Length: 156
Image (cartoon, rainbow, N blue to C red):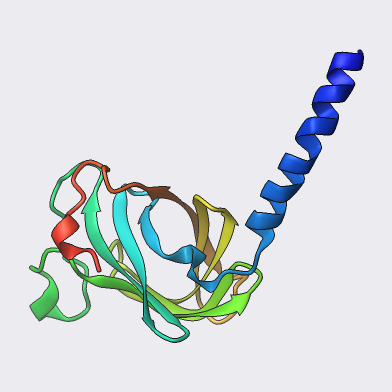
């Protein structure tokens, strides 16, 4: 009993410090490579002082995907690798980015977008029409530089 109490007292400041560090307001926390629900890798990077974009930099399967549903017929044969699919996200504070656009290669449509970091390695990305209630969310997981089929030559 006493050993458990001592362990809890020693661990509490460490847990509190970790939670405080995560809760810190960091506009750059979104930067990195994220694996989407469909297995694509999207690198999110800062474009200017308050804007972030994301582009396809690989996939977990390594299979080439093409932009076959693009409304612009001339783009339907292009490979998705290197294509910006996330544009103009702005940091809103509290680990939230808003007012962006996200392109869905699955249907060739562009939606309004926002993103929220649930934790340092989990991003909730949401595409929507008009109001956020009319949309779809995906949970993206951060991947490391050693992820299979990551095209490091495309990284910014």
